[in-house]
Length: 428
Image (cartoon, rainbow, N blue to C red; front, side):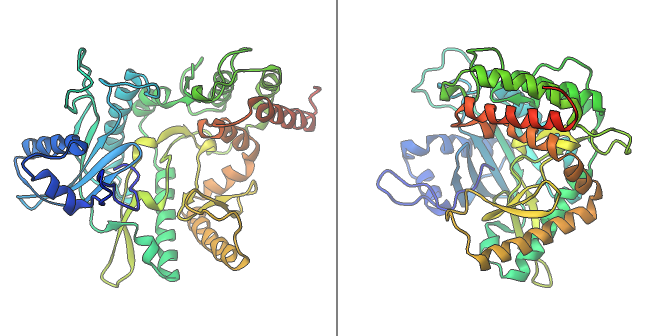
């Protein structure tokens, strides 16, 4: 559904386009040029569902998608999500076409795997269309066949309810979010799903990762995966490192750090004699936050999460690399000992958190993680005993490598790795 924005998009004259205004524009004799794609989207919906769109309660123009909440003439309510990326009209930041098509196919397979799990609260995927590649399409032509389309059953409730809740009701939502997160962590994907999609969902700063061994939920595979990620992130001298648009290359400090990191991997991965809690495969949502949820109130007027969406950011990882973070206007995270903590998020603009507010956020974090650990006890063990491995894994994630000075960033990682090697009695 794209990340729902807090304010509707605007017309060229500055007027906000909410759902009602969008519907008025679409029903005009000549729909405005800046919503031509939404006009085609509505036409495709009506043809697919055999019903007329009679109302648009909400319209969102997000960073990566446009989303339209539609009421149909048959009484059905749906949410249509149309990607902004068009494989027939690529630009300099476009992902390769095979990667975009694979991402669309993955999301369909993911919904098939997860939707039966009621605890995860996915909205039903009613219709999807994989982007179609056509050669010779003019940039000025108007069609949406190269854009990914998913249509979901509209859930009960609405988005952004969090901001209207009192303290007790916010704790109620936090506990539910923790229970959903635990259910996802405890879910065991089918081996066929893992074998098909784990290799395709792995990337390191836009560089594919080559796996040298068979995919198995074992420590040996995790060692190979970790080393492959390091190799893909820090390649050879003068190769691109980090985000391509940053125009950074591998220098001597990053190259030296690479060797230390490769040596360190086997020492920081725990043994797998604990019922394989560290190395079983799990699905991570990838953007687990309140903005990707809808909620309503139950018969007792208590808030209730009705759906979790935006699964297109998800990935498959060994459990030791699973991220339990949950974000509202603050990020609920843990320290290296698995103790609840907080971190500023993009939703929290102030650089300083007042003591009273910090205490409130910390209390919320404890509520979230205590509930999570009760429902998924292995999570706490993994975070605590796999702290060094987790630190390095997340330091190598693509989002950590944007706008960095790679020689400084990886040089410091190399110093850390050498210190750890010495602690393990390895000469450096």
